[in-house]
Image 1 (cartoon, rainbow, N blue to C red):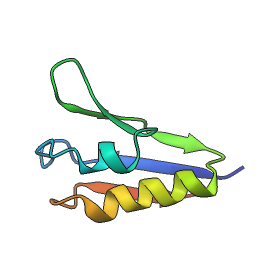
Image 2 (tube, rainbow, N blue to C red):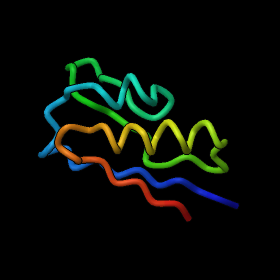
Image 3 (cartoon, rainbow, N blue to C red):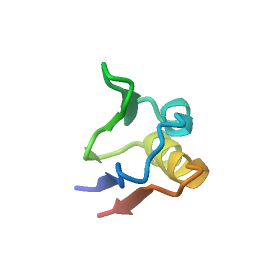
Length: 69
């Protein structure tokens, strides 16, 4: 089984929202307008992997770490 782990350094994150646009299946804004995210995706599709990796790449503060297992 493959897994895509997602970590966000929330104290560094400034809620720019580029990740929300790139990968809405993994990132969203909560009721307080703060970034929320899934901890990981089990058996991610190629589209999921591409979107989450793009989200990490375009984060202005590089606050997202993505690890494949």
